[in-house]
Every structure is written in C-alpha cells, then in structure tokens.
Figure 1 (cartoon, helix red, strand yellow):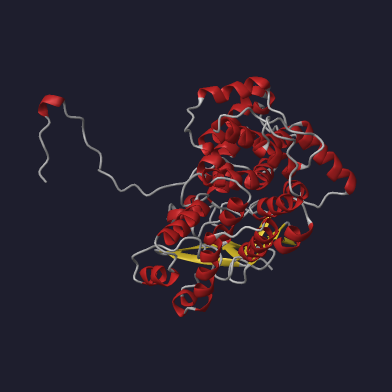
Figure 2: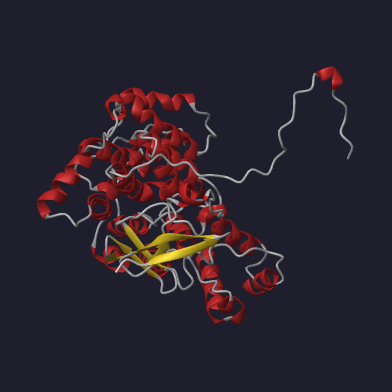
Length: 430
C-alpha cells in the first residue's frame, strides 16, 4: 500500500508520496514540491533532508546500531579486514576467496606512485599540513590517469588506485616532512602492514617488521571509519560527483571537507583536551565542574546521530586497553580518558544530555600509542573513509536518476536597485 501525505497551502491541497526504508524509516518525497506549489523547503544544515536513497550504511542513533551493507560493525571489526570491508562497501557483498585475492592483488599492484608525482612533494613547504598535501596529491592523480575524465568511468583500476595510493601518499608525506627518504611499498605485506612499513621504515636501521597487534588495531580503526552515511564529507563527494566529476576530484573534495575541525579533526581536539587536563595537574573533577559551568568544552562526547553509546567507541575502548597492555605503555592521557568516561557514564548531568563517549574519544589514544603524530590523525581518518566515499560515488554514478546537486535558497538581500556612479555615492546613515 502506497502511503501519501497531504500538504494544505491556501485553498489547495497537495499530495506527497511517503518513501519507506528497510527498517521502517519514512520520508516525505518533496521532489515535485516546487513544481506543484511554487514553494521549497528551508532546512539549514540539511538536518531533516534526505538527499538520496542508499543501500550502503544503516544507522540507528537511538539504539547505537551501525551496519555496513547489513553487517553489524561489531562483527566486521572482530572478524574482517579493512580490505575485505572495503570490497563489501564498494561492491555490496562480502567477497569470495577468489574475489578477495584479486582485489588485494589490485591494491598491491597500484600501491606505487608515479615517480613524477614523488617530485611534487618538493614543491610543498616543510610545514605544510598533511591534509593539504593529501587533498592536492589525490586531485593530481586525475592528471596522471586522464582516462578517468571520461563520463561514467568508474572501472576497478581507478577504484584500486585511489584506495591503494592514498596510504602511500600519506606515508610519503610523513617521511618527507621529517626529512627522511620515502619508503617504497613492499608487495609481500598486506594493506595495513604496508602502510606501517612506509610510515616508520628508516634506511639506516634494520628492516621494519610491523607488529601484528599494531596491524590488527589499524585494521579495526580503518574499518570503524570506513563509512558513516550522509555526513559532511560523504555528501561533499556526492555533490561534486553529481556534476560527473571524476573519482579523484570527488575524493579530493571529500578530504577537504573532512579537514574541518567540526568533522574529521575531532580526535585531535580530544588529545588537546587531555593534554590540557594533564598540564593542569590531571584533576578531572575540576575539569568536569568547569564543563558543567560551561567554562570548558568536553571533546569526544556526544554525537549528532547517536543518542546512545557510539558502538564504535565501545570497540575502540577494548582495543585501546589491549594495545596499551601489549606495548606496555603507561599513558597518562589514557588514564585521564578513563576517568572522564567513568564520570560521564555515572553523572546525571551527562546522562540527561546523552553525552556518551564517541569514536573520536578513543581513536586519538590508539593512534598516539601506534606512534602516529597528532597532525596525521585526520589523514588517518581520510584513509579509513576512502572506501565509503568510493561506494557512495559509485552508487550515485550508477543511479539512472542521477541529477546534478543544486540546493535552493531563500533570498534575504536588497531589492532591485540601480547602479550609482562613484561621484554620486554618499555614505549611508548608520
């Protein structure tokens, strides 16, 4: 039965179809609203606007549920790898052993950068932010693979290139900024192990062999960041891609959107907050009082979507405990983080406001334990989010109803007025 809603405006009534999702979520279909009524909807931040129908990711913020293509994030984090999860997101199903091997080999084959691209690093200042370099280098890939500029080109080689080369670009950026020669990828290593090798190898030292516990932790971190529905950066990828811009251009735009401190920079802010508490003597109770008095801001708690515990945070807390124990690290920041979490989960102030730890709260601790510097945290977020961006771009490009994104606005400026010459202009009264 096709449900409809009725909008009454003036003397007329207008019928709107109701679209229902897999789990019963519903939406008014307003695509013909302006044509039928002359009106548009106004929704700052698109908080109540669905831009598309998608089969990729499902979130239930009230119950703390996150599914990739129907698979619970908890199961994928425990049993899958980042490469397998990437295949799932991009192609819709878990790969067979043969498909997984072919996909892994594709990523291995495309892990190297064109040697001319390596020279591009010489043009960046030594203090350039890694996200600026990442966005620029991904955009430059379209210059080295011009066949990507053809409309509707989304073959597996472009998908493999951007997913594989982004880790090489990131690792090269880190090495160059530390004045060291780059470490080329090693074909015998898997995706995450290869990244750690490229990040931390040093030519004057013995061959770097990635710790399996670090590799597992990195796989989990990247899986948990792989997609999160229609967030700012994913929506940016879709909006840019809706003009039929090539994959590299769309991904580069997503990286720039992710760079914003309100989006991908949140885990950096968490580390900054913990460092401030430590510098002030490590007194969490004093900090909490300041938060309650609105004198300080609590970073890494609460989420626009989740009104319960972020399921990704639960997983990362376990891996943070596990990795710090394995590495035998005594990290004051992690101790402070645990104190903050204990307070937040027991204090009515935070419970009433549904301020639970989110994924950013623990991801920074894990990256810090792995030796990844704070300025690289958002880059790590971007590496993890690449398969989700690819999946949404691919889904959109294969949609027969694809239309270029073109939001409307309500104009609030001056009415029509005539040009006045410079000599005739006079200061306006305050």
